Length: 111
Image (cartoon, rainbow, N blue to C red; front, top):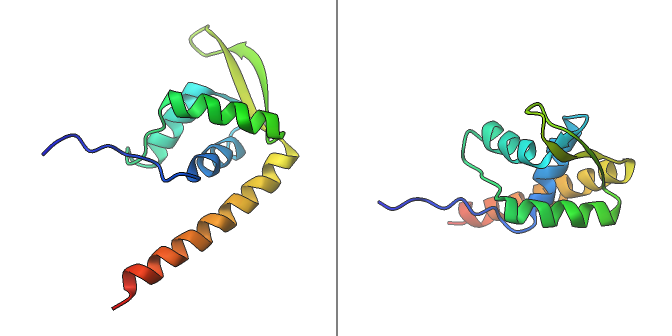
């Protein structure tokens, strides 16, 4: 059996990142990826090539704020935090996810 690739369903990355930021005051990009991987029990992996463009878009939308800081390993990094607009968007993303999963469940249960 080959290595299983854990592709995140398109549209869920924003939800995962916003939810991660809602549970942390400020966090750098690598810590976001490790948080998602750890909390999901290693079922989800966010690649940096997907994360940073998404964070940039979210910053442009006003959902997140970014500022430079120093990591626990004494490295320069951008730290992200959720804005008030981002909290509203998180609620919208959670609602979209609930509708999507409800629709998928209906299809799976259809006999």
